[in-house]
Image (cartoon, helix red, strand yellow):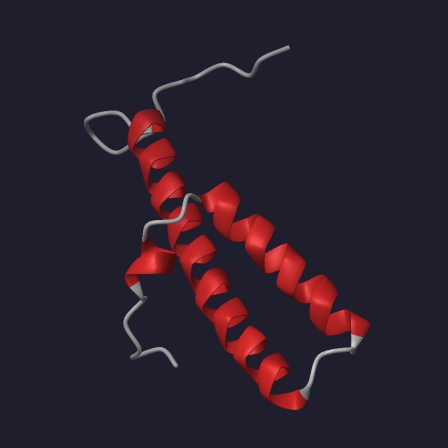
Length: 82
């Protein structure tokens, strides 16, 4: 599924909303009460949501690295919060 583009209804979700939906899907699948076709569709949706969450986390990590890194690429010396 790596070459499948993210559907707009997933791409526009915030990280928090996507994670909440993914959590609900996982709980539903773990319950084992869904019919096979529904479970497969839920699994596919969950895979899209997981990929979306991973991309959002990578984006956030990049932003944090840009904040922490100085102009020469070294750490700017942010001190730890007590």
